[in-house]
Image (cartoon, rainbow, N blue to C red):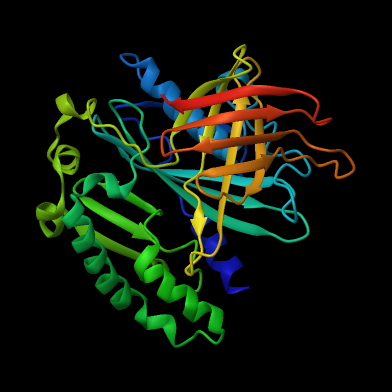
Length: 346
């Protein structure tokens, strides 16, 4: 119940969701609960398209340029799979919209047998559309220093409500979070913010956020990081991010163009298993095809296309992958047709 009350309170905050900046924002709505941004820039349509396609596949299961009603697929019954049914809330907040970067968060809620709430955070290079992983901004030594600094700040920030925990799994999650989780970040001006809302919904909003000012971390940054925080617009287009997930373009059967996103993946603390998820779309149609979680071994994985019909076999994709590319085969339901598949970071 605490989770529900806190999360709904976040969703009810009035956000400057469609404030304009380097990118113009078309604020698409279908109801008070469904609000989503489409970005454009008259001087750089390629970068805007890349960002829209990445977000569209990740949040709406579509390539948005193909849909008049962008909420069509994700609000269908069973769209989220499993217990979660469909998305019933989508809302967003823009943190930065400058010539250096676009940083935002998207809130979602799904109904079904149980309600599920989460927030995804995204930061993009405004000059080439790459998703920026926070590690991209630090030198090798600086990244190690940053993780130590982050651990200290998190221990201090989260201490007020640790005593309220009564479940051992919460304590285990806390220790994992201290050392491993850096996905949920955003940037405002010269400060990096990290939000723990997805892992620790029991704290207040101020408890959940740790911040890192440029003056604290400037000696830890690499040239990419300095360009972001010091306004190096001219050079930013040349800095590329190669950590998953990134937008990939490729082909199936050398005749069907596709857009593909392969997630970063998850590895257990003991390194005894790993999970990875993915989504892709045929560029001609734009409807996302979600792949069920796969368990890679030696950078190779076989994944089944998600289907709401459990009585019907699903198509499969089997491939080897790196941070920026994948190569393998698409296999039909009857398992009697195999087409080559490849994709690489755009």
